[in-house]
Length: 502
Image 1 (cartoon, rainbow, N blue to C red):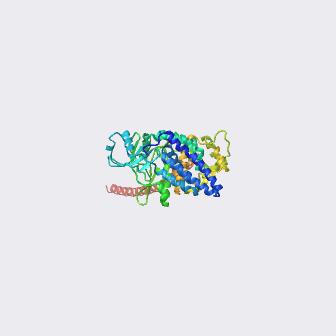
Image 2: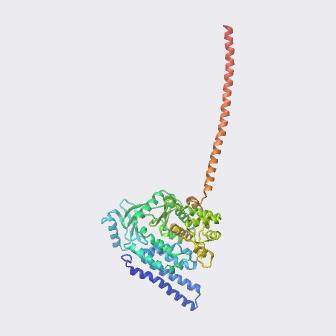
Image 3: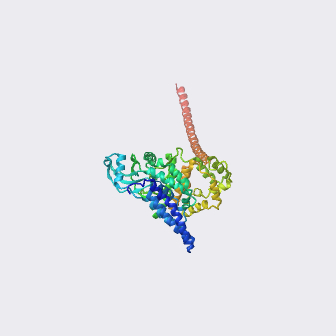
């Protein structure tokens, strides 16, 4: 394969064949059922065949097709367990590999982006890519100063492929919808399409990565590789080793799963507060678990091509809504949702029903620790996807404001990964530490007052000690006065004797 399949007709034909294949398999499944096979068994076979074809095509095309597949990959835990296996295998392959560019084409891109003498910048360069992504592939190398580096090389024609694929996928988004229950595919594709320019801009990515690397420098929990060099279609960063999160998901120990989950939650919520940026591509291929000392682990974070800019951190209404919902303040929650545009003016909903809709989703924030499981994820997806359920009907009436679209997807994606890990996470701890509004102002004031009271008590204690010291000083002074008085009396007697003798 010399390049991305760049001709629109070629890519469109491959993508257009997907819904035709889905329809063909549905007909095949009907025939099987008529022939005597159970609906459950036929459904499982249909899902498996659909998954194999879908992700085979998406992986081959890379570009927007693969980007879409990666975005979907974090939601496989929402699928019924009996059909999740084929999806899991196909999605893992999609995260980890795609057909690479040949070395000659890579060298050409490097020459165009770094100059004809690009080899002088490296002590070593591996022609075989170590990883492949939606718009580029990564090569391991050694920089001229001896540092091990990762060299990301953008596929020629990646921009055209991204736009073409996402436009085509949006045309049959309804057919793709049933693949992930409870997930609205069309807004996901639209959001990916809106961020094409950012995804392709390696200068912007370098800026975002440098900001994270600087903020998390020497951090005990998170490692961000720094940027070494950036050119046209080229991004060179420090290399980090570690266990890919996909391997932790498939084979990790309980300790590794819990640690990875806690660190993911930490990074999700602390990143915007510390850098003003939200890392918006949280699929497992972008994270590594790194050994750190005796039995310790750090989280390595890669790929800052998609970020959301949040100068003040996560919006305060998110934390406030969570807190008030957990406190059962249905009216206040509903009022705030209306103010933020989650409920349109022409819609009138029951605040208590809205609260009932929200509470199961924010359950992880209620307890000190929460165990994220595929079963919990499936129950949430089924609750929202079932057209007969009150949750589905209410959810269809809610609105997702544009300002919250990416935050919503990133949060759901991260929760999807936590459920794949089966991690036990102290989610409330991270919310309290990093999300504005989650801790009420009056609680903060009470804490300040408590500190003030403690200081006052300490001061009073010092005052009491001071009073004791004053008493001691006065007693000493009285003693001195008494001694001086005695000496005065003796002096007077001596004086009288002198006078008499004189």
